Length: 376
Image (cartoon, rainbow, N blue to C red; front, side):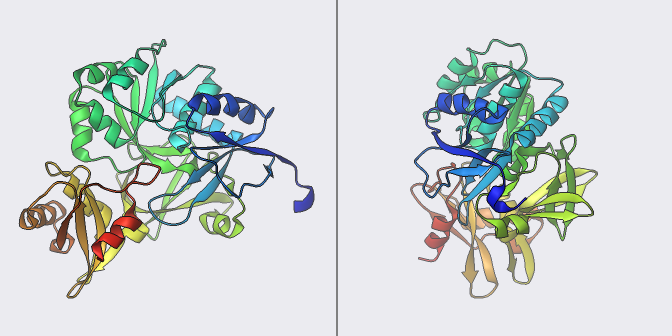
C-alpha cells in the first residue's frame, strides 16, 4: 500500500485549558469513532488535516532544549501503557487529574480512566494549590485512588497537613516529569505516603520505568550509556518528521527500540538516570553530568529550584554554573557538591542570582534562556 492510499483519520486540535474538553474528545479518539486529537493550551499552527488511521493522540513536547516534537500515539500504545500500569498497581481505580491535560502524564491519567471505565476528577490546569488539591481529592469516590504529580506539586503539598492527610488516602502517588530530589522523596515516604518515581516520555506513552524498574512488557537496555526502551507502548513516531522518527525509533533483531536523550546506569537491576546526553560536559578533562550537579545543589537548603547549566571556562574548558533565586556562598556550594559527588570537577564555578527562573509552558526551566544568562 502506498503513502497516497494509506488509511487516515481527521486530526482536531483540542483546547487543553479545559480538561473536560480533552476528556470528551479523547474517548471517541481512543475507540476509533472520532477524530485523532492534539490537546494544546493555545492554537497550534501547521497541523495537517489528517493523520494515519491508527494514531489517536498527538502530544506536542518542547523539552528543555530543541524544537518542538509532535509525538504520534496509537490507542493500542496507550492501552498497553494503562494495562502495564494496572498490573503493577494491582488493579484499576479512580484517578485525579492534577497535571495539564496536554502533558503525556495528563493524557495517561485520562486514558487509564477510559480503559478502566472510571470517571476521573479533573482539576483546572492553573492555580494548583494545596487547598484546590484537597478539594479535588474530596470528590473522589473510589477506594482505590491514584494521582500523577510533578516534584514541585508534591513539595507544595507536603507543606500542608490537610494535603498530606488527603495524599495518605491515595493508593499510589506517581511523581515524574523531571528528576525528583532525593530529599523530597524521603520526606514524602517519611510521612507514610505511597510515592513512586516514574521515568519515560511522550514517546513511551508516559512513565515506562517506575522506581528504576521497567513496567511489565517494557524492555530496557543501555547502548553506549544511552537509555533505550522497547514495548507495545512506544509511539508511532513524529508527525511529519520521518528523519527524526528513523533516528529515534530503531529495529534491532526484530525489536523496536526508542533511543532516549538520557544516559544512565543499571545497578542490581535498577535504572539510575544520570541526565541528558547533551548535559554531559568535559571539565578539566573529567566528564561531569550537569543533572547530577543540579541534584546535589537542590539538596541544599533553599536551593530546590536552582538550575545548573554549562558555561565556558578559561582554564577547564567548561564548568557548571548555578542559577538560583536564593543566595548561597560559592565556597559552601563548591564544597558540598564536590563532597556529594566525590569530584572536584563537578564543583560549580559560579553562582548567578536572578529574580525568577524562566519556565517553558511545560513548567520546566527554560535552559536556553538560562544559558544566555551565563554568557552575559
